[in-house]
Length: 472
Image 1 (cartoon, one colour):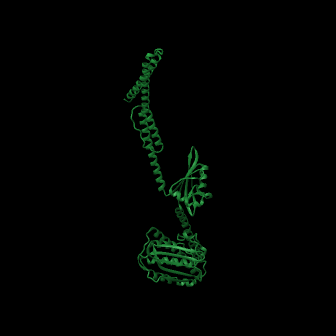
Image 2 (cartoon, rainbow, N blue to C red):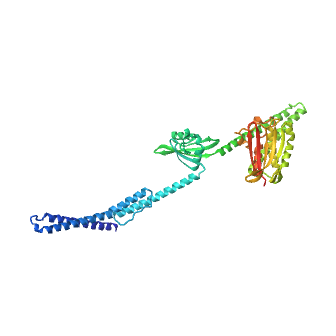
Image 3 (tube, rainbow, N blue to C red):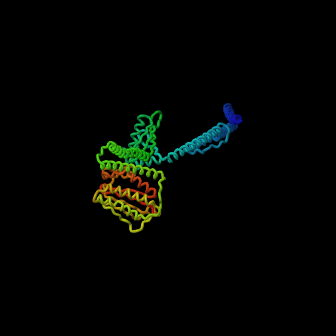
């Protein structure tokens, strides 16, 4: 049917052309046979010539307008539609008015625009999906070229580049937006470009540990850049270090008493002691070391129960002042023997906790005071303060244990509540070395009471341990 319509359309266009040509030929034929010597018939011939010329011109003009309407105008519309599509208006469509080649071309153009519109929508959907994935990632993703110029990064990557701004080579920054990779990543990029293969490593930046996986990006078998994925593994690194330190410290803490138990037991078996007093002294050492091992094991079990949430707590109303006075009386003899002044500074107002475990809080104060005594020299003082305070916009009590010891180095403060961590063994009194578990137990007990504990220290001036507990 389309072929037939196309043939009919071409046929009548051909007939119009033939008529115009025939009229023009007839006109020229008549002009060619005019008898120029006979001027009597000149007006009629001229009239015929004019009629023929006007008719031919009219038909030609009509055909020109017809061609303009049927061919030129659709092509102009198609050109404008193509310009709109090139500017991003993919919804542009052409009106199909005929079934000839122009109509088929219009249909093909509309189909192409429809396909292009669908393809662009799919690309935008995939781009938006990829953007949402990158934006929701907790890992930092950074894309750069082979020279280290950052071309793309997700929000976490942008924040990371800002935090590492002081590590830029030559301080290359532009209005707060870094253009170059930081030095640790730039060195890794050079390795990736040089070897053309993935590279995974860990970098230590600003007291943090980052796991970095950098993959090369290729263009015609040439590395044109790389994409780096960075994950903060500081906590995992810290836990791994704690695990290794825990195994090493437990082995160390158990090896010493076990060695002493073995040595003194062999001495007793070999009858090295000549008198009952020497045998009693050896037996006392064995007893002391076995008790020390027992305390170590009990502390480890208590810590395990606290961290597992199975540690039994007996909650009841508690007045904090009698508890502090009882702890001071407990250490009165020891502080006098070491020539260290131990006293309390209590708030005049009554301080009552609605629910607390008295035995566990006494253990907290005992560990803190014992720790202060072991790190305070003679002729110095230790003060226990208790005062009303605020914790998370609620009424609370703040208890402080202030000593005048040598203090704790700043680099050790973040780790003092870890198991077996000892900031400076040289500051500890000889023959009163602890197990390194006291502060870890203190922190777990305070956490169980929904409280907060912290330590402040100045080298050479002393240390202040303070824990804050909610009253209700």
